[in-house]
Length: 432
Image 1 (cartoon, rainbow, N blue to C red):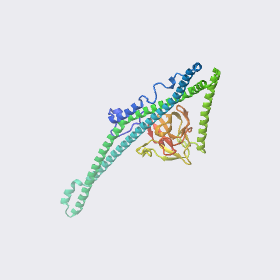
Image 2 (image 1 turned 120 degrees about the horizontal axis):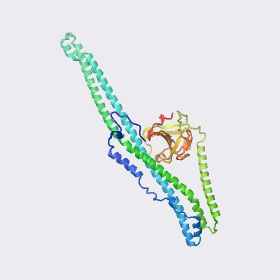
Image 3 (image 1 turned 45 degrees about the vertical axis):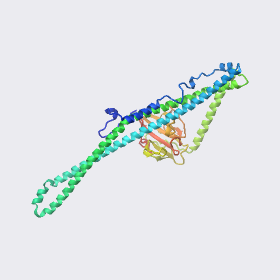
Image 4 (image 1 turned 90 degrees about the vertical axis):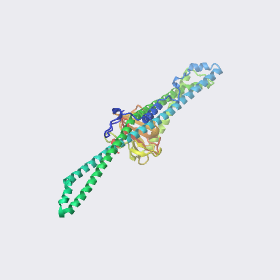
């Protein structure tokens, strides 16, 4: 991923010019990256998947005596608790990694926005210097055409017309003074442009390290989420078996292999039915909350609003964060819906592949969609999600339901558009 080249008067990108990255900025970025890749303290090197699960034969053998049965009961209870602890630890790690990614992304976004600001200010100062210089040149031309060089001689030989010449001399003196002021202003503007250019180069040189840290933080967050998914899958796969084995050991009636296998299958089906019922109830509640929705906003060149009946409540740009109480880049546009936003369907702005769908630091429950060509969109603060990582979605497909998770003061959709990781104003893509 490379950030689009930024044009600064007299400047080149740090990695192309051999300019050294400031040590304190590089050290901070590398420290963050190192922290992301550090050894996990929340879990051991072996997870539940490495556990030695008992077989049905082990359970039958354990029933031979009370002591061996109790030992097997304790062992199975420990394995069940271990599966639960593995899920909790994986979830805690995923939250930590997501928070680290959120902080790293915010640091890069703010630094990139500041570098752009400095570059634009440098161009503006250089333009002012050119304008002042040109105006001074025009005044000198006028001074010369008026015979400024011969005014003293004209005054000596003028006779009765000397008053007019004195007036002209005074006017020319003022003209000369104005010219000097313009040249001085041009010199000041050139110095300002040079200073801003140097500041922009320093800011630019730190971006690559910050960008790498943000990408590594994102990768680490995705890896942590994969651990959560693996831990949950392991718990679902082994939990029913262990619970049935535990029931067999604590029951006075000895089961046959067929009865044991039937019990495992029935327990699994019951757990799946309970999960499906809970999901269906939650989906019905979300759809009821978003009732009367007219679908995504109008499409512009294949792009549409992620929220219907939208109202822009906050724009892209630098702002004072309402929760963190600091000035930093608001990397997207906030949308609310007339008539109420909580529970409203959130739509994919365009077709693509989901690369992230989980808790994401300050963005709460968020979805990231890759549209190809380095272009991604992000949808934050959702109450719940309707898609998973790796899923292909179409433009206008429901991907989530609006909420206020993460750093949020009320239900809304935070919508970002990024090119090669760099935040862009969503208005460049969607006709808000």
